[in-house]
Image (cartoon, rainbow, N blue to C red; front, side):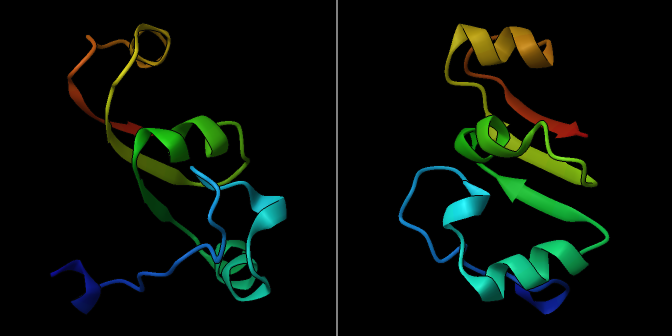
Length: 82
């Protein structure tokens, strides 16, 4: 799996998405040091898409607002780079 090529980590938070102010110090250290982040799930797109980081988001667009934001149809699987 991907864990052989990349470090997979939990944010340390029970919040949906990744709300940085609720993340563990260990997560924040990895986040700040990462040159590239691959983030899975629409909640992560919603919470991190405005961050000034190289992040690729992989998710299924579950609502019209997000589908329009990324230029797809509801239900589509998308890969978005920011």
